[in-house]
Amino acid sequence: MNGNSRGGSGGTRVLVLNSGSSSVKYQLLEMAGGAGDRLASGIVERIGEVPEIPDHSAALKQVADELAAQGLGLDSPELAAVGHRVVHGGTRFTEPTLITDEVVAAIERLVPLAPLHNPANITGIKVARALRPDLPQVAVFDTAFHATIPDYAARYAIDTATADAHGVRRYGFHGTSHAYVSRATARLLGKEPAEVNTIVLHLGNGASASAVEGGVCVDTSMGLTPLEGLVMGTRSGDLDPAVIFHLSRVGGMTTDEIDTLLNKRSGLLGLCGDNDMREIGRRMDEGDTAAQLAFDIYIHRLRKYVGAYTAVLGRVDAIAFTAGVGENSAAVRQAALRGLGSLGIEVDAVRNAVRGSSARLISAPGGRVAVAVVPTDEELEIATEAYALVST
Ligand code: AMP
Image (tube, rainbow, N blue to C red; front, side, top):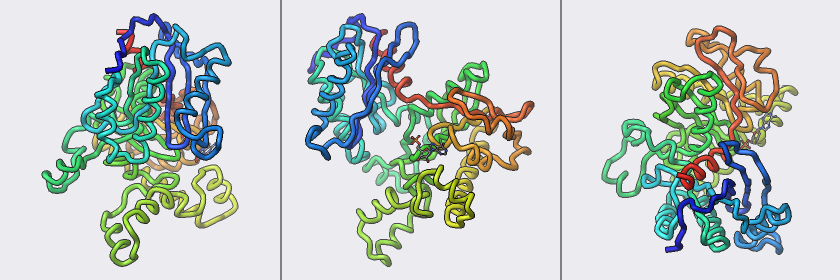
């Protein structure tokens, strides 16, 4: 065991690390009094692509150097913990977890479920532990918030023994964002999370919807992997699984080729050649029909999920838009909820057009369902969860 002791350091700062396959993002947050002030942040990119940063170890050393240059080094006694974003926690990790050797091994066993993400997360954890073996390190899982989804929504209707043998079920992702945004939406309404039913629409390059009942997640659009659900920047979202057999048998494509097609060459990019909603908007203004059709398909899927989760929740108090597209595209928000007045959902065009960086309501005054734009802050959520774990 690597002797991570809980608390005791007396520190009040949390370093949040998000280690991806070719980049490490970091933020140092001051958590005293629940402040969450950002003391430093940055990103080390192109890991393995440039000679100065051959691997994650070098990237993390650069993070440490950048922090030290600002007088905020990893050796600081004010550091209470490192919070690591980990994409897949499987069915085992449903809470933020203090990292031990055994926990690292368990995250390694989940690699087959997230072959692109978990290995980078694990490398980040290992390097950070080597740099500060005495410091508590906490894993915060993207899947954890969705652990409350009931079996009837989490299980696919396939042979149970086969599903169980291979861990096939809906796990959901972006959980840290859905958790943060659903709570922030309740706060915006002046209510407790337990009092509010919310549909959260996390629309970034990856996109997912969730149905949150009284603060508890009851359904989400991503599944075994982040491929299912909404149309995304480069991912297809929902499709008939027989498309895959067809592309294999009739199209002669290999499994890896289909995997790449659906994850990297589909979604908005596959439909119109662009995955950035800003560019798609510009093209639509010029009358580009491919961009228009891509937008319409994206919106149609989104509306179907809003309808589905309205039925799942029974009573919807709020719909919250977040992430790059959700926070910035008034056109997407307007189109997604157009004509839903009979469900009590009405977007106010003037409020919707106002840009801003804080949580705000965009619904028409008096509308039964509050429609909100709620900027997500996954780093703050990770820091909050990690700090709560080490300071208790
Ligand atoms: P994220 O993954 O949350 O960082 O979101 C990235 C995506 O947000 C980009 O690919 C764009 O499609 C979208 N985005 C960012 N800024 C804007 C904007 N001003 N208007 C529309 N879409 C935007």
